[in-house]
Image (cartoon, rainbow, N blue to C red; front, top):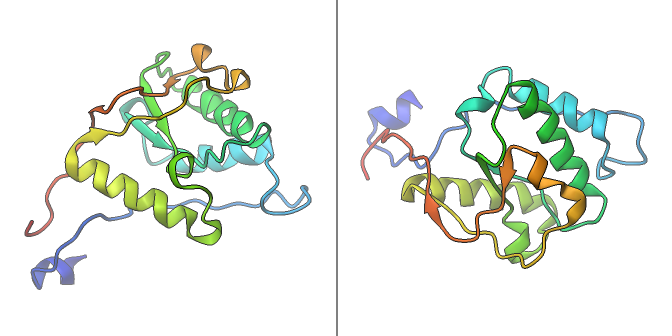
Length: 158
């Protein structure tokens, strides 16, 4: 980062931390597991206070099993930190463009970079969310229209 800034390179975003896990108990790395999701999110939110989060770009593939597990894990972790109901926007790029397999994470990252640069939380186009997400009793909501969101601080030339 220091070299990029020194050289005047355009910096669109910087990743300040990551967390990975595999529970070793499920049939594969793509099988959802609530405990593993919770453990991963606990690692992530050791360095970021969930009370400061305004938007979460979720894995959200539209599956009947995986999405509710992901939202439940997020709800439990954010709930332990006292994040109020419906205060955090939730979205997923895969809802709009489909699952891109190994490039899915990169597509979500690109969406976040554009959202931060524009200072906008993107809308989620869904007519009836999966009721198993239980969003009404969670810190999360699906924004129906684009709205103001967090912005990134400039680290280099525009």
